[in-house]
Image (spheres, rainbow, N blue to C red):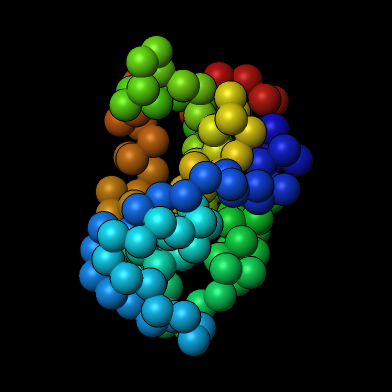
Length: 140
């Protein structure tokens, strides 16, 4: 699972930017525009959540995600994502030292999001039928 998730494959679909006009890396993204999912998440983490600096690139966000997934001190969670019917199997990676979380959708085989949850690892503990994986034994 670590190997699959660390490939950092974002979906090819477009998401509607629902916040405010923003200029990033010389491109202006208007409210209501359809933009690639990876760019949508980058812009949200920089300009809405303000968790990454304004000069962060998609490559840097992807490096942070990969480092989170691959770090030996990262907690790994598996759970059902409750906002879909039926719930989808997702893997959560949370690194306490950086506060970065990565969500990997196993069924779609893509990164669902990279973010810094306010509630820390409790974000994953609160998901549907969440189980923390023992990274050493690969058991629940």
